[in-house]
Length: 267
Image (cartoon, rainbow, N blue to C red; front, side):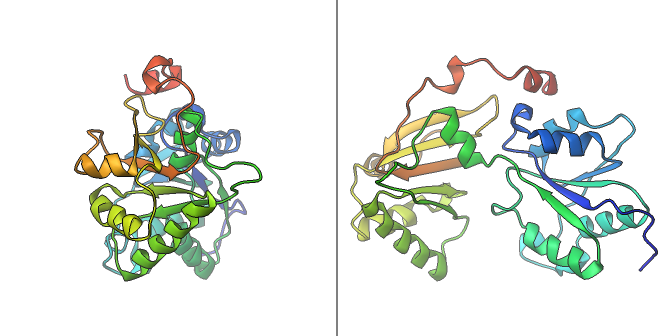
């Protein structure tokens, strides 16, 4: 390994669901002070508005490993982080939402450990949290339910099917489940819930593009969602919040003003 010219750790920064006003103060400061900013997802681009004019901003190609193929040690992102860090530059790697929630930061951190490169993670607002707050959705209830289960459902295999069945049993104790990337697998998911005896009148709030100007919401139930043929007419990505206490308590997104920063970003 080449001799390291500086001591600044690589910062893995969560940018939130999209709206720049949901970027944390710590994340904002990290981006402003960065010499090099690396990202591989367009969702994070609004956060680049606060980057220094002198910063090098690089859109890194997503690796085969992240698509289920290839070797993780060979990812373009890791190579970019390593090269710029060893060159003595302050490196920020941007991640959508919160880096620790389904973000794949575990693999990257393992590799940084192997390379002897120090790092720190700056948390971000997840899409599920943004969706719940946008509509003042209660996702837990004091003294009655303290459980919120987050599940990514881009593929339903035996292991995930078992997880969904175990999660379905928690609905009886008032738990709330937040599903990501689940739309294509809704028939299977709803079938599992039905087999496990989850009531058809269990509330569901589906939020499309949480934290974006195009944000949309559908309030329904498990039974109605199944009867509608699993199509709610809203665009991906969609976060599904499901549970006994889930409901919309404030006006839809369209009735509120768009973030001024977001409007500037989209011009």
